[in-house]
Image (cartoon, rainbow, N blue to C red; front, side, top):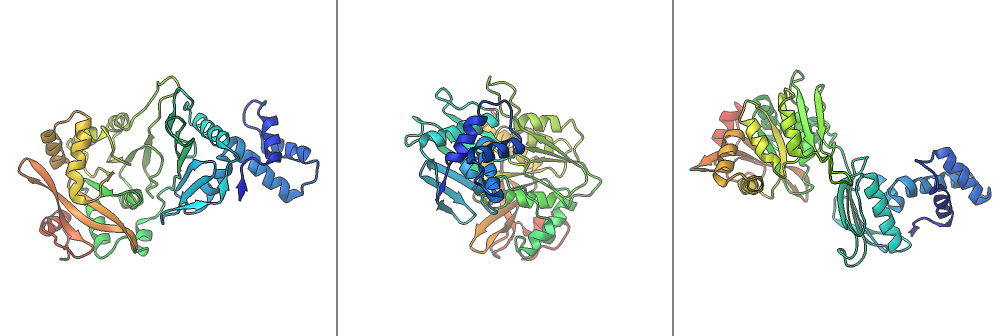
Length: 383
């Protein structure tokens, strides 16, 4: 069992709390030696310094979990209930806080580090920490059982296209077909459920873009890391404690259009920015792309309707814009064998609406748009 803020660390924290600014490691080490009475060896001092630093500037008792390779989420339901996700479902860990006040204190400090307010007047917060970790916290009485804390760990998508192919994420002919889609400058969306690898695949595909092209990325957090020589990154910003200064994805898309992008990329399309993205792809910005959460490729039109409707765009307008802007859907699925490309779908009109018809499927299922996909890519698509 791991205890949060043991007596030595608590004493050091109390002494440093009166200072201004972040203490240096040397100052923390000196206080650790003083408070321990010189009884700790070098290893003990290092451990205590790390614990004190985590308590003051990191995520406290949760910091080792956030550093653990493979961990994507750390969830706290109360002082005695901490869970992690390493890609195989949630599992409890033997980590404890002294009491509810310690959980609340950590949540409030993390919110402050993100420039946000968390107190009785503002009972929840959703923000990005300086290192990119996504923070969500809810305080009582909104959370009935005590402070709830959720941390989503930023894992930058650093795998190359070749890496994904070697790992089996690009089954069958999908690697050749995707490379052809990038060369043809087709506008596409990478779709799938949570944790299917959408960002990883999109980042790898952007690495195939010709070196002479300029990529402008619009993201909430810096997750895309394409291996490309000309990348410009724009990031959103939450409102400050005065509820001013927010920068949304929609703002970023509009600014990106004035930055001469050869490829406009939206890390995750999940709001009103869909209107500006579709408009941009209809005005000469070929090869634009992004990711969208959907469970099936065929569900994309309904998802676009919902996003466009929230931005004030009617159903007919959403379908008309999407039909003119989008060409390809790269759908990912997570199964027992791992995550990978499951389907390449073609966006086509059906009367006044659009539909996504399968042009290639990893499972060998029906592909009514195989001929259309072959024409678009200029390569043979296996049946």
